[in-house]
Amino acid sequence: MCHTIAVTEARDHLDHRVRRSWTPAGGQDAILPPHAARWLASKTGLVERSTPAAPDSALAVAESALPEVARKALEAAVGADHVLRSREDRLGRAGGLSYLDLLRHRGTGELTVPDAVVLPADPDEVQRVVEVCAEHGVGLVPFGGGTSVVGGVQALRGTKESVVVVDLCRLDRLVSVDPVSRLAVLQAGVLAPEAERLLAGHGLTLGHVPQSFERATIGGFAATRSSGQASAGYGRFEDMVEGVRLATPRGEWRLGVAPASAAGPDLRQLVVGSEGAFGVLSEVTVRVRRLPETRRYEGFVLDGWSRGADAVRELAQRRVLADVTRLSDPHETEMAFSLSGGWKTAVVRRYLRARGVLDPCLLVLGWEGEPGEVAARRRATLRALGSLRPISLGTAVGEKWRHGRFSGPRQRDALLDMGVCVETLETATYWSGVDTLRSAVRAALVDSLATPGRRPIVACHISHAYETGASLYFTVLTPRDLDDPIGQWARAKAAACAAISSNGPLGTISHHHAVGVDHAPYLPAEIGSLGVDVLAAVKRELDPEGVLNPGKLLGP
Image (cartoon, rainbow, N blue to C red; front, side, top):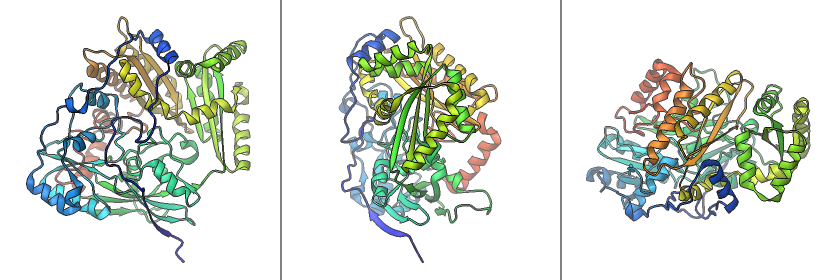
């Protein structure tokens, strides 16, 4: 008996325009309150100034170089109305949402603008588009939510004379649900909030909520090996993927027939994380879970980074992590308290000082599920923390974090307007190397960015923990070098990447942001030259003409 429910649910409205902001269409831009601006100026030496974005009309956009014969073939594949060549449409898909991408869209530096935007409607049209691009030697960049912060969706031509962006926004359907096996098939262009809405109609959830959640897509999660904030409970995205449908120049490739298999290496995991270099994902089969009946989020403080990291390691190795387990170092904790402001923050500061806390580290714990399960798991977590004497700040702090967890990305536009260089980077390592890696990356960033009059803030948190190690996520804020803003961050990022990749390396070049363009030079240090050769051989087999996402993953 078949228990799969075939569905064709999709968004009621498609907006093909792309906003060059972290705030989703219809969302509310975050405003930096005056007290936060004052604190930032006192910490970094930021001089009050206005650096507004340049209007799109001021940006240089070359004429489309897409050959006429290729244009006609693409129009035959998807319809003339779905091959877009206007300046606005092309500019809207020019790059991702990194700090450097946003600077380029503000008129600093050179944009890589595609020659056309192609909007296939279903997996069959995706396959035809890939075949047309291979036949005519046109570069092809898959595009979901455009949230890459490592150059993963830059419209690079590589050796090709033209390049198109394949925007998957029309692949927006929940295809089927198997409630018995708890599987769902989602098209690659479904936005994460929409996926949750569609699944909730069946009493289910994916539970994958990274910071890019408001804009990112199912295909993008799979292509980059994304990791959500509740990964300790729901797993990383590759843990959720049960099957894929991939369009390649050699033909369509479908993978995933059982929950586990010994039929050779798991080729699904070869596709997951391939960043569009091996093919274009059109459908993803994912493991889903029942909607949680209750959520409980709490805040705690531990005194000092070492004690905090030990606490998270203890939870991981005792297997009692909360679904969300996030530890901020003293710098990030100070930033969180200072930017929050208000009398309640002052009360918390006095309370911690009275308890003898010298270097407060904020620990956010969140549990989701059935009420009895959440209560039992919470008791186990807090029992394991007991000897480390955490100070409880209650549910108010935890809930404030949960409801404000997307405010950071949204505030980037306000910070950019003020003349702030604001960016993030991440890595991961084994527990024995966490302190060394954190110190090395922090030192590299501070040494690169500190100048007379400029004092960078370099904050860090553990966002994902495992029995054997943890990720480290760094946030950087410093006054922008108005003479060379792109070089300022490029040098700092290179210094941080060198610190990660040296001596072993100390950690991975990316825990969840992927490789893209930015991290490709550091990939050989992590997987070895033989590993790079293996990936290159796979690409040659699947993409003999080299049209798929030129310059990503393996570099030029």
